[in-house]
Length: 220
Image (cartoon, rainbow, N blue to C red; front, side, top):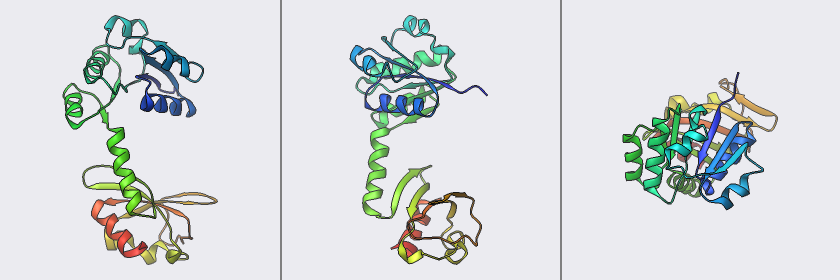
């Protein structure tokens, strides 16, 4: 099966980090930026990297953006350029367009012009760090929607040797432990008799309220 190909437009902190990670994961990535220095820095890392003005339709057409499976507009300092580039990618037939938003208003405009996904790197990172600061056992936090969250929680000493059946997170809090990361490997969809050990990592999904109650009642 052919792997997806990505074009990342805007090679600032977010765009370059995303591009490098996609390459690390084995995908082909074309990086585009009008800053020659930014392109030069990544030319040996990415599959291809070109200096180009992304708001020029002829330029985007000439570098073949329509042939990519996903286009990511990671322009952060120029909202007008971000919006115009996004419109051009849609018009040129890029199958999936993802765009970085600087503000809620910017994000709403991007949604109106039909992007497939809007991302808010700074806002989302702020939310995740805030939750990690107030919950010592919380390793990661991803908001699936306004009401639902998936979280990674370290198993504390007080839960060592406890089974999922004893904890009963679904019955008590409406949450599900969907995976447990143990030193010997990850257990996906663990059974009720699975026993936790200190420093295992639980991946739990549920409502924001349910996960909070689980933390307050079981872990703290």
